[in-house]
Length: 254
Image (cartoon, rainbow, N blue to C red; front, side):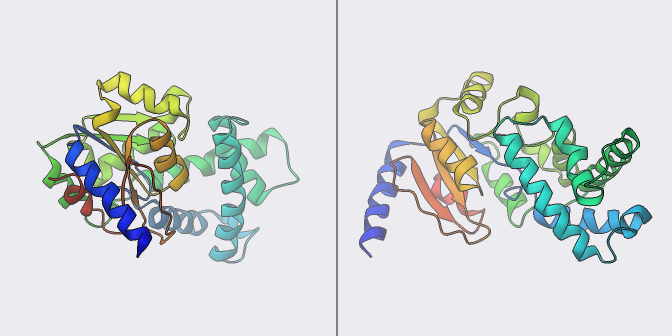
């Protein structure tokens, strides 16, 4: 109860002192249901590709192994240790052919990666409540997307779901070579849009990349806790933890 009272005081202070001019959203698992779309895409890939069935007899075994290597590759990428061009085929090589390092294997893995991203980008997998939220925010503030990821597939996701029609500015790490939570990507977004940190809000599902990154950059932040992580922050810029994306409008006074 004591924690909630302290949080309520901070929350009330923020509402009195700030009306957001810009709201930036993370894309994957905030606006776009990446978890469901990725699962569907990997299942389709297993069904289409006999070369995968030759290694894994079930979809589940293939997907579990892929996630191990994909997670590790993204960790390295976010630390700047590997490029996105290396990550894309390497996650499939490690999953399917860990002992092979020849050019033929690389060509095959690049093809598998392209097909996976093609399926993924074409999924109409908007998160629940997002379209209603966007309609409510339209005309009341400026809306941006600030996302890590591969630019070609991130744009396709927004087109496939139709949310691109609400977005005034898209900032993608792949295009500028800086990943969240690096403060430089938040500074880049400010410079690209004219946003001022005092009246800018970041909404995202990742406590480190989205929320900690935004707070450390002087922005306000709303944690969209889709997966029940339960993380709380107590800084003045923290506007709240939500499990319903439409609550963003209520918190921001729209």
